[in-house]
Structure formats: structure tokens, C-alpha cells
Length: 605
Image (cartoon, rainbow, N blue to C red; front, side, top):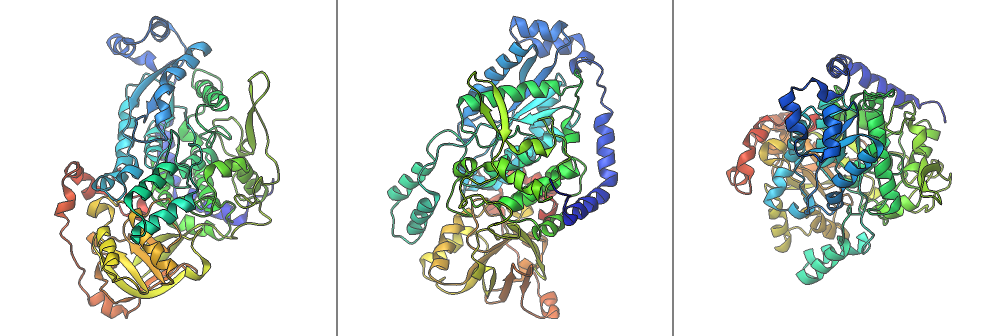
């Protein structure tokens, strides 16, 4: 293990200094919670009786008379998310694991969990980002019963993990861990699915063929196997110390998966205030853990959504993370993994090649990761350079990962990275600030200079394409898609259309104050533009034909005109009333009004 890289050390120190007052206030708040005896001991008799009324005799007696720990289970189970379907059986398993080990566990509450795959391109997608903060609030409501000495968070997908973690950090005095369930088996290759999508966009494939390809890709319980936001979440929870080593991508319903689940249940109880190793989640998530998360995103080409989510998570822990921190690290963190859409492989192949253990081992060896962190595993980050296994008796243990990648097409060491810089970059110029994912963009597309074609709705892009109006070089400006406008939906629906045009040889790009799916990436896309159009940002001043330069090499994003001309233009406005009602959107008016800018997390908390 080498000395910490000077840039990593410098960025961390800047973050620590910037966060000094807010972090101190956060720690003071969570450390002030009384930890004398079981948390439920301060409840009144009526409170306590209600709390154990529905329990069986053994659990009821333990909660009524005992001094043993009681864990909260916060579940995001539903049948809409294939990744969360395995959680249906987890609460009873966890309760039994706890009983066998001499403590108790209760489902404290459930949180909503939206599948972006179901709502992609639909009105419901406008509720997606806001659901993160709603999940955080639902987590807080569940934990506010105050019966608990620790918590287990059952969540995997896009907004669910960030929301659960924000809520968990509000109760940062409690030990806690995330309990994954693993990816589904590999279906048809992701590139094959993408080709069918593009063929459908061109009218060369029918709906039946498209549905067959989609169903062969998303086909069973477990997480979708491309490297989007859900699997970026899993990477983050492991590299930030909230999973057990190697737990993120072990498939569902295997003996090893069940052993990992049992082990984390027992470990969280042992981290409680009733034991000798008290370690609350608010102390695990510190500046070093947050920086490790940013490094993991760069090294794997992770989801751009985490330039929103990780900022919001850090804020919940009193840490003032900024896009500038991501940008400062991007120049020194190499890209070590290529998982679709950044390559041909899926997360199962990544896991088989050495997965998180290999990645962490390589980063530690180069001094590109904070080793001196606290984790639910009880070690520093060096403990995560191991893979879990079952011995002949079925006992769980960990062994050091190989120093050699099992598949150099998927995962590489520091001596031969796929890129020498990270997969995410910040853009800045007279259009404001934006981010771009470059890990899968061809080198000859990192700079696009082309005339603007302006749209106020993503469906307008598809309609223009069908009319044959987009067979040329252009930058699609899709505006009024920010958090205050309509909830900042993902615009993944645009990917096949723009990819077809790029494959035809046209130089195309996307510029938007909205989001793109974590599964997007081959077409250059300047996203999360802030200030957004509805706030009269300069993106609202762009007109059809204006020349725009998107330069991901130098990090510039500009409309090419004199400053006085841009300043003199009035921003355009859009009638968004139709997007503020129906499909539940009328219930989220306060969220739209209160949402922060994208660079501050696009949240309401």
C-alpha cells in the first residue's frame, strides 16, 4: 500500500476545511444522543407495548424485559423492481438470524421504490428524482419509532440507496449497513439489445422484436446487469464501507449470498451501543469515505446521477461536496473497468474478473484510495481487497484477491488502464456548469461544435428524427427539464435516436438541464446544466442555429457569440402546466418550488 496520492490528499483536505463547521455541527448532534442501555429503554410503557404488540412470544419477551439489541429493517421491497423482488423473503430471514444470535429485528417501515426502467420516457419519470428525498423522509419516519439499536437498509436501485442513506444519516447515531440482493443472471448481450433499440428507432425492427430483446435482457429477479445507477450504488456502498467485502455483485439466492446476509445482520448488532465496538453510520461516512466514493465512480465510469446523489448524501452528513471535487480528481483517477455502456461486459463478468476486490486493491496500491477509513467489516479499506468464500463446512471467510485480472477486457490493473483519467468530467462556460460522462464516448467525439436545434420536450426529438430533419451535424438542446421545471427526468429515450445519427457519421451531441440514464454514454451529452432554463439560465437564451461548442477535453461549454449579444437576449419561456398534473405530479409542486440547483444535489432537504 503506497502513500496517498497528493491530489487525493489535497482534495480531501479542501473538502474537510470547507465542511469544518457543518461537519462539526452534525457530529455534535448525533453524538448527543443518549446511548445508555437499549434505545427503547426511555420509551413509556404505552410506547413500548405498542412497539412489541405484534411480535411473537420470544421476541416480545426480549423486547419487554431484555437488554439485547433490536435492529430496524427498512425495506424497499416491491414487485416493480426486479432488483428488489428478492427482498420479499428477507425480513423473516433476518428476524430468524437475529433470534438465533440472541437479539431481535423488526420491520420498522417500508419506503417507495420506483423502477426507472418502467417509467423511462413516461410521465411518472418526473417523480423519479424527487422520490430520493421522499425515501429519505420515509426512512426517518420509520426510524422515528426510536425502538432500535441499529438498522439494516434493504435497497439497491437508483434513488432508493441515496434516499435510504440520506435518511440513515439523519439517524447517524445508529449503526447501520446496506444489505444487497445481487444481480440477475446475464441475458442477451447489452450491445445486442442496443442494436435492436436503434433498429426500432430507425423503423427497421417492429415492436414485437424490440419487446423480445428487452424481455431477454430483463428476465428474472435481481439487479439489471448493465452498469447504470443501480450498480453504481452497489459499488459506492462497498467502496464507502457500508457493504461487506464482495457483497455487491454476488447473485441472489445462493448459499454465499445467504451467508453474507446472515453475517451483516450479526455485525450490525455487534456495532451497537450495547457492545464494545460501537460504530454509528454517521462516523463511517466521513470526508474520506465520500472521496473514496468519488474515486470509485471515476475508476469504473459510474453513473452521472451520482453527481447529484453523492452531493446530497454528503450534505446529509455535514460534508460540503462540490462538482469541483469530482473534476479535480478526474485527472488522476484512471478508468480500470469497462462495463456496459462503457464496454461489452456486464456486472456479472466484472464480478467474475475480480470485481470490487481487484479494483480496490489496485487503487490502494497506487495510493488512490483512503485506506484509513471505518467500515461495517471492522477493518480499513484493505479488508475490502478480499473475496468472500464458503469453506467445506459452509463457514464464511475472506481470502486476498488475485493481483491479476480475470478478464483484461473488463477489468485492468494500474499498469494498463483503459484510460489514464476518470470517466466523469465537469464542463463550464457561458452556458453555466454541466457534467459529462466520457468513459464510453469515442475520442473523436469529445469535442463537438455544431448548430443548436432547440426542443422543449424529449418527444419532439423523436418526431423531428422521423420527419428526417436531423440528418446533419447538430447539438440537441433539450431544455426545461431541470428540477424546478418538471423534476429533472432522465432522457434515456433519446439515446437510440442520437446513437443512430452518430453511427450515420453525423457529429451530434446533447445539451440539457435534465438528466440522462446511468446506462447512457456513447453520445456526448452535457447534462445537469445549471442554472436551468426555468430559472432563466443562459440555456433558455439559445436559438436554433446558434453555434455551440462542447469541449470535454478542455472542459468548456459555450454558445459561440459575443458576451454583449448573449447578455442582451431575453430568455425563452415554456408553458409547463401540462407537466405539473396527472400521474401524481400535482402532489409534487412544493418539491419543484423548493428544489436546489443540480450542482447542490437537486434536492428539497
